[in-house]
Image 1 (tube, rainbow, N blue to C red):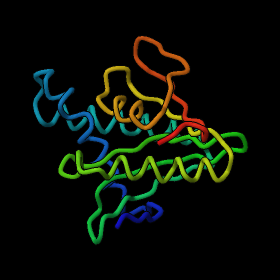
Image 2 (spheres, rainbow, N blue to C red; image 1 turned 120 degrees about the vertical axis):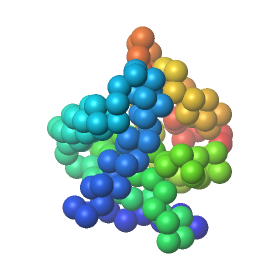
Image 3 (cartoon, rainbow, N blue to C red; image 1 turned 60 degrees about the horizontal axis):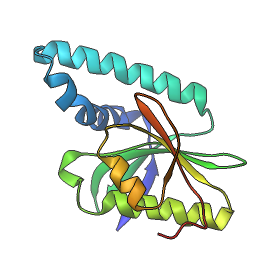
Length: 157
């Protein structure tokens, strides 16, 4: 059973842990030492936090729980004309177990009930893009780095 709790100040280290787990493979390949990697990731994490707060001031981080275990983080902006999945990430130990699919389908149901599209942005080469496509998300715009995707309630899932 999945549940959510609004992230509190004491959850900051967990939020960073989840963020770092999504970037460690990429940054680890650069040949830096552990201290340099941690310093870089903390800087990038801070930039991400500020960018999200500026772009989606009404959104807040949620901790994703499975039973008594914290398994990931999510930020969702519920806007007047759409729902935006700003960010979602699971710790590696909880990936490929259907949790991401379940989370997305729950948001799709919410979007359907609200008669709003569900939007997200993903890096072009992120493997999660295949999951989004499988669940009916369609590419609206694509650059070299990012793909803007949207799901409409009339799309089957």
